[in-house]
Image 1: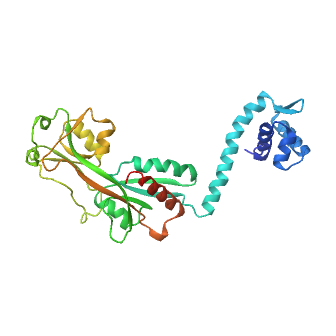
Image 2: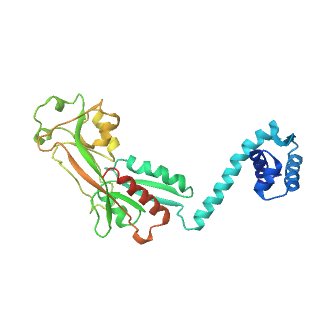
Image 3: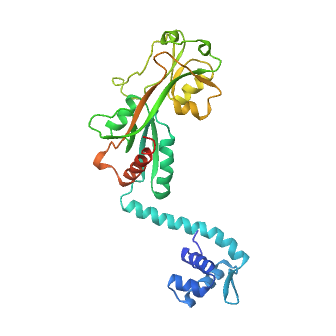
Length: 296
């Protein structure tokens, strides 16, 4: 269906309402007083509704005018956004970037800076891919990610320090291990262990990490599933301390194990595509680095 009105007509009405008079709006738009009056009267004729009335020296919107302009304002904002996005795309800004996030990383380290990035980069969408073990390496070496948050630096891919994750052993509050003093790793041999699967696609590069001598294991895709299993009393697992602190201290207990109470994993950030990294990815990378400086 062909539209009766144009964006320019609604923009004229918007400026008159903002300026408070036709003369002031004409100066702001660098147009003549007569041109604006004609535009508004033409709009009223097309709609069959009175939009503007003059009270003294002020141009005042009628109730119908106010109602319609409220709807039109969102349309004008969208039009401005379209032009801004077009300008960004024309300048080479990526329409989408991929960030791979190692499962050991606290997600808030990514999403807090991302909020500020998105506010300034409305043309770019972000795909976040959670990785673990060999999958973390694959996302870098195959250059599937524009930005990768990894654990150990990968050969030939320069990386910057991003933070440190502490891993702690946990069980449900009512698990038998919570009643045992002087825990040693040998005490876990007969207890079900919950481990996180290597999400890599290449079976030749998949690897295991940590103590895996329990006689029975449950393997899950991520730490969220591992946490749920721990809470249900299925077994024990080493979880990132930031997950334990968030909201689950009422359901799980951190264990003290002789010579194996906790360990730390250093996290790093890298640009897998190197010199071919686009401007949007570089901007987000820089914001992530600046945020990291506050915790390193």
